[in-house]
Length: 106
Image 1 (tube, one colour):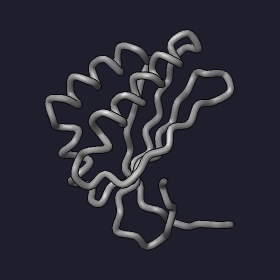
Image 2 (cartoon, helix red, strand yellow; image 1 turned 30 degrees about the horizontal axis):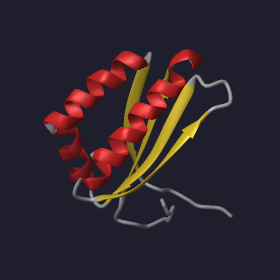
Image 3 (cartoon, one colour; image 1 turned 120 degrees about the vertical axis):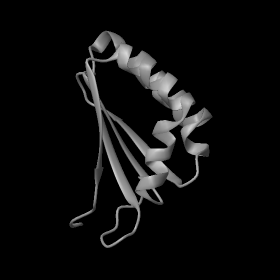
Image 4 (cartoon, helix red, strand yellow; image 1 turned 60 degrees about the horizontal axis):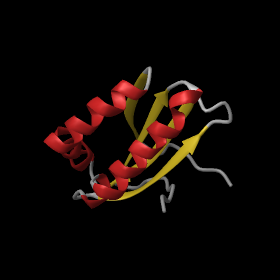
């Protein structure tokens, strides 16, 4: 389970996917398989949460990694390059962005 904490050395990656309602479930299935079968077994992986908006036009993933280099190494694997090509075919766009936690409330 992702834990949001300020002043952590972990790398946070938020990826947004834009798609049509007709491909939302297919994309969610593909992402779920990617995390279950491959990504969650990569060095440095901590946790991920997948979120779908009500209109089923966007999926967001919130993942945490021990180091940014771990996330980058996972992206460079042949397995993930192949998976990302399939994911790209199912959506209008997707963009992973690395973030640092700036503040937490609540």
